[in-house]
Amino acid sequence: GDLTWTERQRTIEVKDRGSILNGHTRKGDEESISISFTAKWTQLLGLAASPSDPLQLYEMLTFADGSTVQSTSAAGEQDTLTFEFTVLDPAGVASERIVFPKVYRETLTMSEDKEANLIAFAGRAFVPQPTVNRL
Image (cartoon, rainbow, N blue to C red; front, side, top):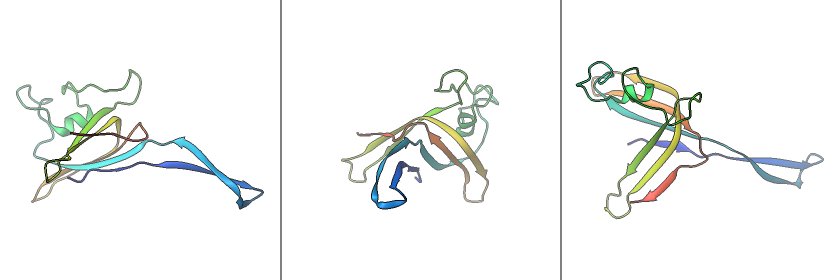
């Protein structure tokens, strides 16, 4: 896979009359996580087009009408989802589950190619860091 996320830590520099030498730093506001990944697709619409078809990733990420996908945010807030990724240890002893709650979409890019069609997701998780657990 190509899951990527960035955890940011804001630092406020407090200078003493413009001097760093006599100044100090302090913690800034918490920052949300940026997250991105790509996935292969064969069709964009499934369940929204026909009740007998399976739900497709595009439908889930766009909250498509007829897809039955529900936001994890409260009514009136931006639509969000909880993303859960399992990273398998090749040796089979230390696999991990990474959970990103309240993920909202910033961009969704679809591309068609001879080798594979791709959906590229970029968004943010409204938390300062994901939850990581050993399986």
